Amino acid sequence: MIEREAERIVASKARQDNGDAFENTLRPKDLSEYVGQKDLKKQLHIAIQACKKRKEPLEHMLFYGPPGLGKTTLSMIISKEMGTGIKVTSGPAIEKQGDLASILTNLQEGDILFIDEIHRLKTSLEEILYSAMEDFVLDLIIGKGPSARTMRMNLPRFTLVGATTKVSLISSPLRNRFGHIFKLNFYNNEEMTQIVRRSAGILETELSDEAANKVASCSRSTPRIANRLLKRVRDFAEFQGDQSISLEVADQAFQELGIDMLGLDLNDRELLKVIIEKFRGGPVGLSTLAAATAEDADTIEDVYEPFLMQMGLLERTHRGRMATKGAYEHLGLQWLEEETQSKLL
Image 1 (cartoon, rainbow, N blue to C red):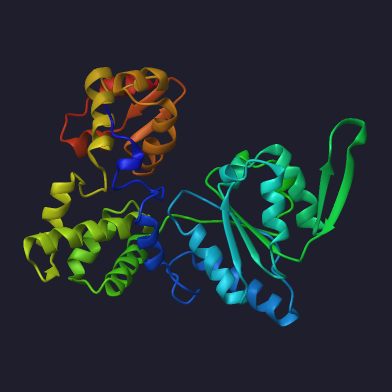
Image 2: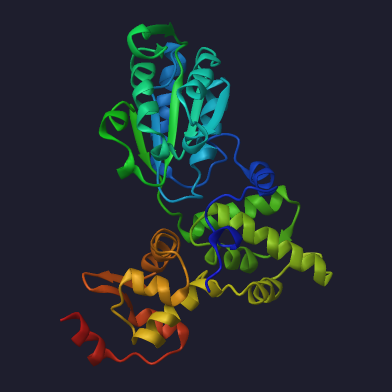
């Protein structure tokens, strides 16, 4: 059975334990410290400086992209650059109209309201946001039935910053009310190495250039995973009694963690092996694959597959999932080219 993502070191979603405090320690505090996303940073810098000159709040912003790339960090940076407060919540945490009304009425002029996983916001709550985002008013219905009445409250001018991993699930009326929509892309190896070195400096951890590059290359192009792996490697080095992290120490740490040179862990390799060994490389349907791995179909589709496809190790075809030639080579298995090509026809 494949291990759940919440227990994986290479999970890109934030954990609910003291890992949050660790992540906050390593977060960049302003745009000058933020590594990567060059075009996004440039547009954000222009928008912030222009609004500060006009002494106006920023237009509402939507950040979307895979988890762990810095959407929450950017919201914190926007708050600091604008010199305003920030309220942080998430779509699933806002359950009823009273919850959203309480949050909105407690905002101050110019504050940032950051809603993570905004695509999971209920439709009834989205409708309240329409007038709040456009006219900065809160329309509430008091009572039920014939005695129900509408109450309108003025709100301070605020900036809503939404973050989502599934922008397609956000309704068009809500999406169209954002003045800025930014996509966060995966980071290249040079940027990841810079992030690892910066985090190591904050943690007062010495590591060689080769070790920094090793951690970066195994981090799935995701800063959150890089920081988590760096912490694990640091623990291993301290356990071994090493004062600094060398390439040899990093290699030993990753071997103990079961993470290979591409950043795949035991779960990723097990999924590929099931496709290759039980289904002769595929194609295999998602439901069949879920039954064979004793894993939830949504978890396979949303957690495992994106990175495997990004690395060119897995393909989605009209007939099902297939392991690629790269997957065979990575696992040290023989690639049967003629047989595989015939399956695609």
